[in-house]
Image (cartoon, rainbow over all chains, first blue to last red; front, side):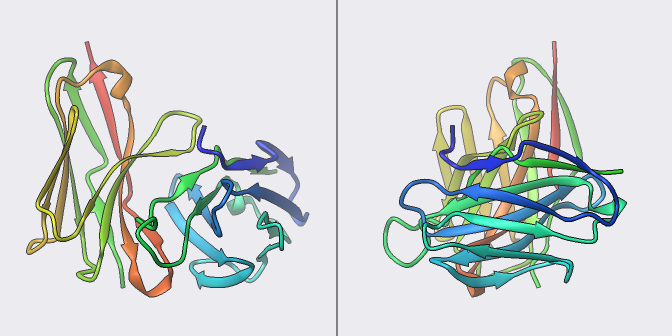
Length: 117
Length: 112
């Protein structure tokens, strides 16, 4: 158990709909990352938050958005869903910041599998 | 930009050694990682190496880093059927707060 919790584990929805994926990081971790894993694209970095603020942005579509709340949990919002958005969405957390504790190791949740029909 | 490449498949016999290779492009990487993903599960960190090291050994795992060639390898000694999984190498991205760039993943199949 990595300590990172993601909900829901599975989600089936239709094209054009909107969904929200939720992530609770490990206790004490300030950074949250979202990754998308699909068969054709591999593991793609979407976005990172550190202590509530956006830190880095990757290949995230404009239809997608995320935020990190004061309690450090994060949500990834996917809207106007298309068939190609079907994938496994991972959240990961890390200590973040500077210091000896920060080896950059990411702890991954078990993922939310999104199927768009 | 960063790019991390791996071969897609590796098949070995139980008891043999497995060597999974990875090449990366970002010369400013500080840490390099090996993650394991079992079917239906998230990624689990196996080991990592700091960029000023050449080798790191941890039980059955040996990581070799050739920084000049930007080549990273993971050797699994006495490979077991439980080692069957997808193995990802990753590098840390210094410009964006520990964002990791992952390779394509190598599917390791261990045969009896």
